[in-house]
Length: 237
Image 1: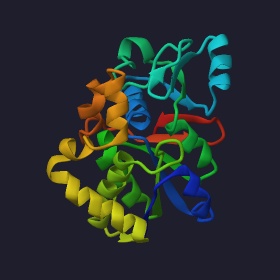
Image 2 (image 1 turned 30 degrees about the vertical axis):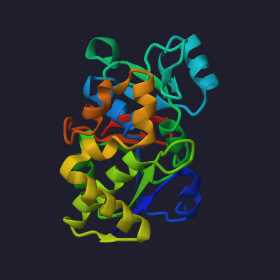
Image 3 (image 1 turned 135 degrees about the vertical axis):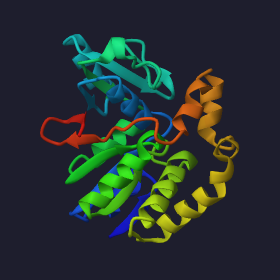
């Protein structure tokens, strides 16, 4: 079994020809962390959509909608893209439509994968154990930023790679090797390492840095968000 890291959705078509594998979509700041939080707080499902227009149609039909572009909550939406928005009293038992700048675009890109799950530091051990049980190759698909590389998603890719190596996986490529090396450098003080990132500056500029520490904390939820390509919904498996 091998683990691969794809640094950007724009690169994913070069990996998509692999059929029998698990795709782990990650958007640490903040979509994948937020989806895990919403499911932990009882959301029935997350319905990821790529466009603002589709989200607005769902809103008109009476659905709860989380929508964000360029770190800011969209005016028509019930929620933004903070894990703290999706409290139990608001989402328990509800289907939540969700669109974000990068994370939901990456899900859309990989939606034909045989197995697609959502990964974050908050559920990283659950993800690693699931992959081991499935005995399949893994591709970590980093949402990045507007199809470009970013540090935080790649660090998750390295962290998950490290856990999977301990479970018998091997490195698939230079990309996985680089992600693992980055994680090993960052792990002693991930908060200090992450302060150099572009996204931290975006969050701080919009007074949204309150979720950063939560997004970087491992194993705060025991959630396995699994995408169903037939229903286009993400539920806790």
